[in-house]
Length: 249
Length: 249
Image 1 (cartoon, each protein chain N blue to C red):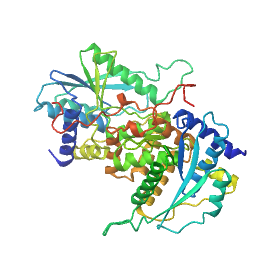
Image 2 (cartoon, rainbow over the protein chains, first blue to last red):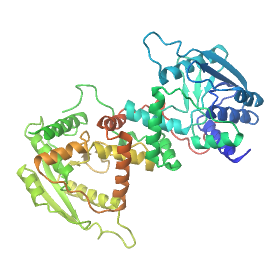
Image 3 (tube, helix red, strand yellow):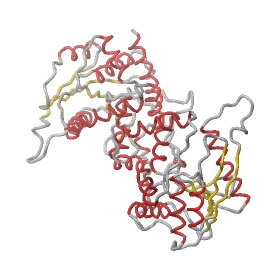
Image 4 (cartoon, each protein chain N blue to C red):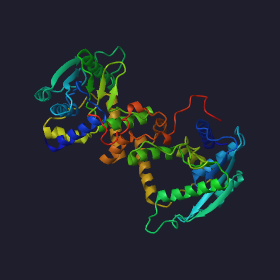
């Protein structure tokens, strides 16, 4: 294995162990956009299946939509199948599902695609959904939630659904985007990114630029932001907001 | 009372109530730098003494040091005394207290001045120390701690010392710096700021610029960052880092 792929492999291993992401007999459904993130994740997990201490199954689900230009997925599909990962494709009319008067946006699209992943997982006996979000996505969401939702939260590495016998795992949580780009270049698959241009995407672009200003492009400072989420010192914060009328004199 | 002073008065009132900062019979010692922040706080608390539901005492301690140029404090002292606040001055050789080989820095200076405040409070029966840190200071510290200490924490509105029968309160926690500047201009007292130029100050300046980029100068986004500290969604963070060797398979 080459340099960048080795780095990704090690960071994914640390994440899988740290958050106990894989248990024996897991049936994992990957959300496969066809882009660099989920493809990198797919190929790394496929490699890990060969030596990981417990056995698990892996399939990739691509949700094709009526949003944006449709990418040519032939080579990506072949990469998955060559690695022994079943490639499943579903068609979802994201725009077609809008009710009269509703406007298309980033949140609607991702919710529709997520719903399809959950449905397929439940109907076909998968107990985990793996998503290709990386460290930059997670730190951007933290900053976005603080700035725009006034809340300290992010997309966590592991989420257990309460309503379904299903968890979401994000094995790339410790991998920076630049490390994934290097890995994709090294393995020779191009990067296809969401090109829809709806509003949520532009807000994320804006936060991405702000984050770069905050960290001066430094990986150390970006990782400090990530690590800060594991060290919340509630004694040194502002406490909960008291309910109306209950504050003391 | 004029516009800016009214705004400050209201925000201080909300903070005093929200964090129960003042209890009956409190003897409060103000850390008075002579600058716009602590002077604004002093004058506002002096005004509140006249109508606040419970009675409390107030004195201002200025710690003069051998760092930087010494400001002309006559007019500031007079403002305090005219408002009925006792003005106390102590001399502390901050540089003189350095041991051989130690270098002067921002942290050392503020620790020395804080120590003097605590000593004076304990020796003279004060049970609270009031500091002039405002919302911008608190949000800057949050961002600085996340970026450089990899920790989510700040200077909280209230800190109860474990070692001493003493609390620190920051009644300007909800007031933005621009609102204090407006108040100081309105009341006609100049702003004297720390001019020492040591390293801690420059890091704070750098974080201040980054924060401005993050919020685009928007008070709403800055207040969202502040409010986010009261809404820590631990379920949607990354969890604690497991001790070495204890992570699962």
